Length: 297
Image (spheres, helix red, strand yellow):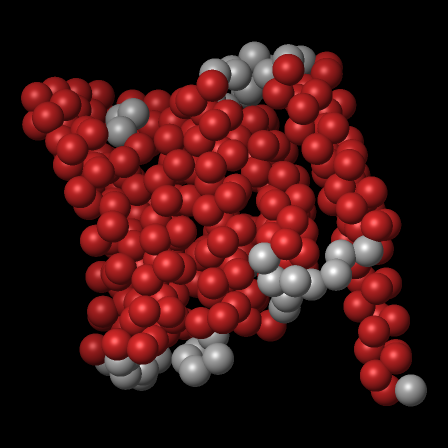
């Protein structure tokens, strides 16, 4: 379900950017629809709203800020380059997660795991060099989102001790919405009022415009909710690998649906990156299995 909802979100999101290229505003809409959904769910008790105090709020604010920054920069990248290219760059997420786990959390990452990430880095570099839609805004934005989501993953794990993941994500969405609104108004507000909204309505009509924004927000919230529920059950590194395998689906579907032309080298680079992630997953699974056996022995 996480993969399926993410594919639909990515396709609809890019279709919106093709006629309404305002990623800061669209990022706010994604979060706004999710917050309305959360408030409606709380009002009927599904789930029951968990109380929040100042101590927990302090823990959640860093998560929400990282979530907001990662979300906006992802959308800036999606709007600037092909969906398949953004997801190829974001395949570097396990590399950033491994670095953060070792150097920030102090967890020991075996050399074999580091070696398995080398093809991921090489593949992304190969794909980037010959990507037909390449531009620096798209590339740098996707890299910033990698770093932001790595920190979000670490902070989320720390914040999950006292509250269930559904409530955690609801509070994160509310805080992130407030973080995203000011830059959207500053960066895109004047353009939107001048011609942004009117141009979009002229192209697709008011009904489709509002409908697209509503549904892209719903799919965004639901896929992230499922991703957060998954994170509750696994380690951040394992979650990162699941995230990258999800990109295989997204890259494949986006190339087919949008008819994106990719060079041979970009195709090979993307393949190498995904193969590296598969190798990483197998090695990581074996290490975890050996740890479990050691504990039960």
